[in-house]
Length: 164
Image (cartoon, rainbow, N blue to C red):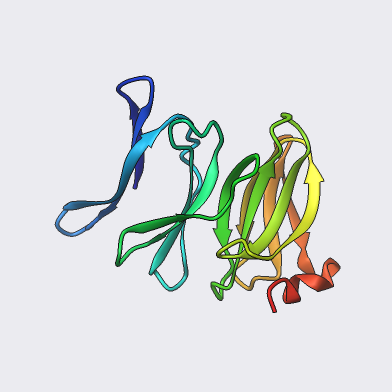
């Protein structure tokens, strides 16, 4: 569960795990945010990590963080422009996400390793949102200007070698 509420100039942000049987709620990440979309939250397929978008106070931008569930340590993996809509590939080796350079247009869909050490630019469009891998990892769905598109990764042969 990802929740935020305006209590001051910043928003309180919490990421929680809820036990559906007992209804117990465990906060696994908390902080203040100057900037948050709140839709960018995805489990890794191993269940050991979450990736989410978050904008801490004073930063002025939205970045991606990978949270280790066991240690509760969140590591920032992006730092340029606005980064959101993260999604894990089925085998957990790659992520897809959207980067907006801050101009309000020309958002770019990237795939990268989970540390964002190596990445591949797939395409750039206006109003790009909602990157999501297909279950077989061969396609990525996204939204642009209110329409849903499916990008076939076979057209990008380099995607399989983004992070050798």
